[in-house]
Amino acid sequence: MLCSCTHPLEKPLFEQDELQLVTGGTLRPGGIALTTEILTYCALAAGSSILDVGCGPGRTAALLASVFALQPTGLDPSAAMIDKARRHAPAIPFIQAEATALPCGTASFDAVISECVLSLTGDIDTSLQEMHRILRPEGTLILTDIYQKQPGDKPALPPLQSCITHALPLDTIEQGLLQAGFTLHYLHDRSDLLKQLAGQIIFSYGSLEKFWQLFMGEEAARQTCCALAAAPLGYYVLIAKKGTRHG
Amino acid sequence: MSTFSFIEDTTWQCVGCNQPLQPTKVNVTYLNSLFTVELMACPHCGFILVPESLAVGKMLEVEQLLEDK
Image 1 (cartoon, helix red, strand yellow):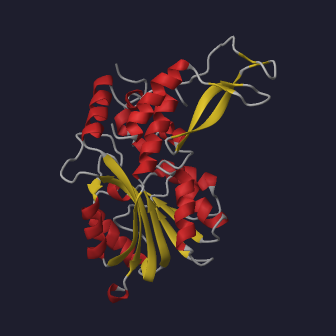
Image 2 (cartoon, each protein chain N blue to C red):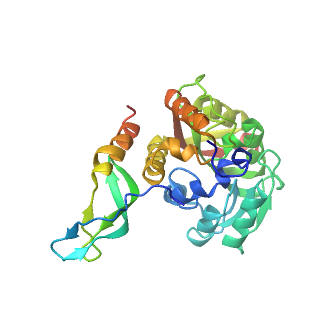
Image 3 (spheres, rainbow over the protein chains, first blue to last red):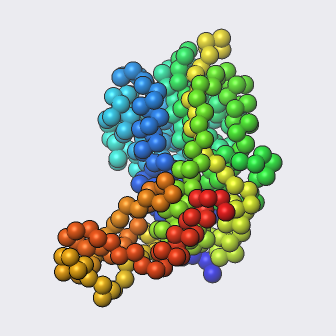
């Protein structure tokens, strides 16, 4: 039996209201609490410019401005998300664009933040090079994302547009950072937050399988659960700096 | 919207407050993780009814997930 959505697989997971409801509107493990924790740790100077790559409905951008007194710009390839973000935070500039071709000047931002987005950009090397290009020397890159816990053991998932479908091993991400010219300053495994989100989905939807059935058929949902159990995913937080030698 | 709920008509009442239980969003801490669950609770003192289906059903499923079983 298919769910009642029209062509559910054509709509990315991050645009689904069901996911937003269990993540408090932030569409990722850890939610706004994790963002607050990282930004507090980074202690960026008030007034610093920061680009939110994959800003979604604009929750982080609003937090950056209101709590941390930063000057955020949001960027997302989804017109629906940009529309939501503009309604949520009308004073903040939001741009519809891809992470692989940032429409921003070289060395024009003090910081870049990208939460649960990098693996979705299609080409992480190009995306990281673009983030490096637009950062000022010694600029800060903040990344969170899903990763493959067992390299080479990619889960066989239906074609749902989601970070879980495109998760990469942590080594690949670290290599991409170094090649782009970043120096890794902080890397922390926060897979506990991914599990917490999965647990919340069980409490909110009855089971993980029933949650996936909202977007796909029963058999595909069952296969998705089996694939994720066989090839577990993790969640990381990292902070990197733009090295001056590449600046 | 959430499609699953532990809210149900129940004859249980809060003895201390002599109040019928009402649907309430409750924060549950379990194995160092925090979850929001809809449960029947006393509107006066907040005493919560944990139904059997939660205690031996969903909790087990979540426990297995959190402990990588």
